[in-house]
Length: 101
Figure: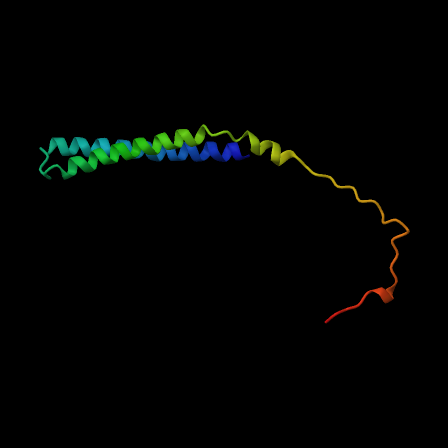
């Protein structure tokens, strides 16, 4: 179950990182087309968006490669405790119990 969650999160985050890269490339293309009228600030923003998207994609791929095999064993393992009846030698009468309020 945990591996399914990790796989779905990895796919979603990878998609979002890819979207950042694509929008960064579009922003870079528009900045270059306009002749960099923003004084380099728009160019730096576009490059930062591309690099940020690549970092998000890389982190998602790393997150998806983590080992989650330990969770399957823990989810299927059950502990069964058997409790026998108390021996007859363990007797208590009502006078040995005191309620302290």
